[in-house]
Amino acid sequence: MRSPALVTRPEVSFEAMDRVLEAMGWFLQSESQTPPLIPGEPELAVYVKRATGSALHYTFNPVLRLRVLEFSGPDAVGEWAIVRKALPVLEAPALAALLASSETQDVLLGLLATEALRERSSMERVAALRFHPEFSVSRTAERVLASLVPDGTEEAFARLKEEKEAHPDRSVLFAHLPGEEQRRQVLRWLIHDQPASNPDVDAVLRAALVDADAEVRVTAVMAAARLQAREVLPALREARMPTSTREGADPRDRQFYSNLRDLVAQVLAGRPLPPEGSPKRERMAPLLRALSGPADVRDDPTLLLHALTTPVDPGSRPEGLPEAVVEREGTYRLRRSGLEARWVPPVEHWLGTGPTLRRVKSPGFFVARVPVSRAAAAWAMAASQGPVGTAGPDVEEPLPCTFGEAEALCSALSRIEGAALRLPSSEEWEMAARGPDGRLFPWGNSMRDDGASRASPWGVEGLVASIPQWAQGGLLCGGREQPVCTSRREEASAVGAARWVVSAP
Image (cartoon, rainbow, N blue to C red; front, top):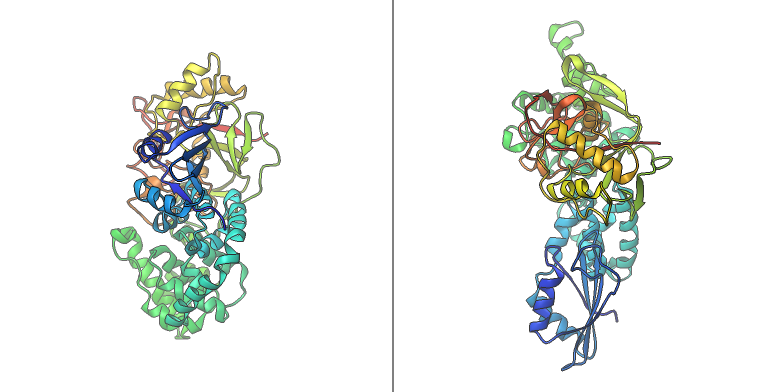
């Protein structure tokens, strides 16, 4: 039998945990002697409780803030239960939220915590994460699932069976995919890969047409048309299209979505369309073309149709790494400062809007996962005179700075890393934010209040945080007030955040 384990919440520090354990009679017998990555946070420690002969083994992953406590001894289960009540710990609901997060670091924390706790209720979510676009997540999910399957298979399939009996015409597995972005992408890959619908695809579409996410429902309408899924016509007619800003629908798109659903229902039912050459048929022509094949992108409405039906091409991994970048635990980081980067592969991107709409191929580059924070900026300016240690997790609010200060910060990081770091061009910033499918916002095509916490298709975060971000030439991109990916403006006296770029070799 494996030792019972607990995982504390990531905000619980070692110092706070130590105080609680000491008050409960635990004695710190030993801790790791190597200097910790985070001061005051040892990565290994052993506690003993002499009164009961129990031991507690503590491990800490500083990158993910994963703190695991394993108990052993004659009354390990009893001690586990007592400590569980005294410390803030991760349990099934919190694990589910982590596994459904759009942030890679949270998902990895959820996976490793699930593995440590043997939390079998999370098995379906872990199984779905095997298809996550981030390699580090999919690889970790495979391993964690293997550790859960031996004990959890029968229980998990019993739950799936119950749900299937309640809704026999829907795909239960699709409904359990964590995060609306994954559900959208499943539908778009079905459009891309399937020549026509079949009973299994119909079940996925029925589940998608009642999904909580409005964009999933709209994408399902497009998928039903492309795959000629006539069997889902009753569900399609009942599908609720977004009709308010609260549901994420831009006022300009609300009537469009409703008309889209009605037109698809008309086509699938075989009802006659307006005659060829009539003004109404001419207005419908771009939409009819999009319903039968890849959208012919000519303007903003046809770009929206393209975005709703095109899966994100993950591109290729970099052929080589620049001298300043290393790969650690499935993520890219600057070699000396440790700041995290994301890879924007050399694939085609739709940029601009209206008359500036164009398709541009990325040269392939690494970009900061988040804007540089106050703490990281202060460290960089000091360490550029003689680097010591690493910058630490860059998770605070970004540093507001002028354009000149942003360039000086990139120069300081360049001296630390011994390589050229620079501000992104406005096109590079838009590529990092928009991904290759031409979406309106970093998170998709619908407005939402929590956009500041959402990552782009390439995993770039903080794109629409409190302040905009500097690009080359003194342009400001993004920000809370202008969250669309195409936003850029010139304000010489303004302040913004700094986000660095490293070119591919």
